[in-house]
Image (tube, rainbow, N blue to C red; front, side, top):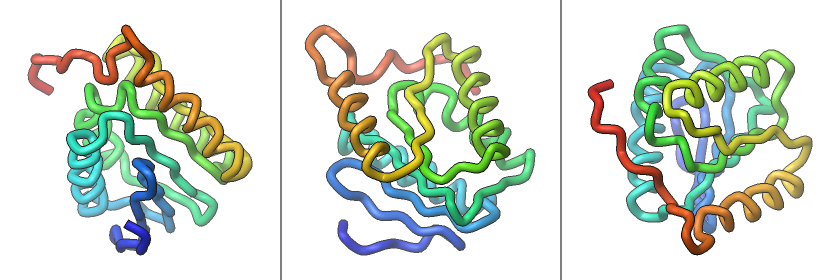
Length: 148
């Protein structure tokens, strides 16, 4: 997929198993619903997919959207490398709190990083995606059967 697709006020495309997401302000309930569907489809189609989020134009969400995201990604995002480019201190803080909460809920450390530029971000993603396919290392942890 070479063309950008709208995701509310944001846009995305999929390139070599990487979900490239450019944010542009508020991430709404509708945006999250669409993002979850994209994320789930990628998880099925490509077990080593990754996310590269460009947040230079800003990103925010309501507490309700953040809570829904935490529930939706409780087991899904454990082994998905996520790198964020252009994050302000506030965005890094919120994202770090989110990933720490995920770690506490799942017992698995998040695969996430903040990078200053896209070259550094892509290099990090290559390394992390390689970790997912090394022999003896499961690409996906067992699915949690507890209700959300």
